[in-house]
Each structure stands twice: as structure tokens, then as C-alpha cells.
Length: 107
Image 1: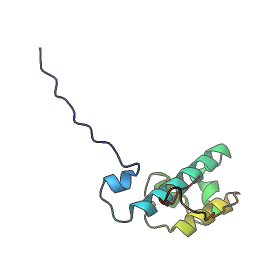
Image 2 (image 1 turned 120 degrees about the vertical axis):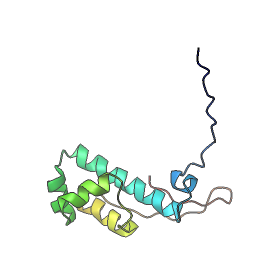
Image 3 (image 1 turned 180 degrees about the vertical axis):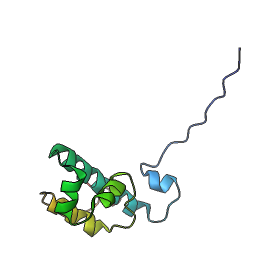
Image 4 (image 1 turned 120 degrees about the horizontal axis):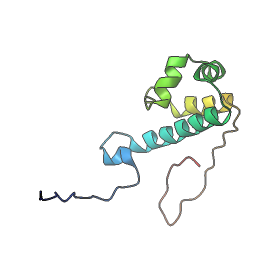
């Protein structure tokens, strides 16, 4: 019987972009969160990518690429504007951090 290799596990930081060593991992995480919201909205409203693209003011291939994970070329502000175009209110809340650790997040 073949001997199984033991996989080594390393705990993640909670931010896959930081774990991968990318520059500006916090910004990437925020963008990813916004893209998830965009994707869920498109699905919930049962929009085609073409219809979503028209609402957001971009073309369908860009929607497809963005939902496929290629969103580096979009600013956080532009992704928030896409959510507004899809019928969401976007609210930025600033409050004191918990026990001295401040963070950016998409709720």
C-alpha cells in the first residue's frame, strides 16, 4: 500500500491577498467584497450580464471579466458606483476601531 504524504497546513491571516504577498492586500479585499455584492445583486435581480453592463455603463465582456476575478483595474469608488447603478445605497461608516485594531471591510 502506498504511503500518503502529510500535507502541511498554515493558518491564514483572513486576507488571502496578504497571504499571497500582493501589494495593497486590504484594498484587494475590499474590492473583492464589492465585486461579490455586485455578483449577488446581478443574480438576485436575474439580470443578464448585458443588462447589468448597460446599467453600470460598461460593456458585457468587462462585466464577465470583473465577475471572473479581474477587477484590479477598477477603483473602490467605481465599484461602489456600480452598486449604486444596480440599485443599492452605498454608505461609508467611520467609527473607532475595536481594542485598537482598525480595519476596512465590506458588510
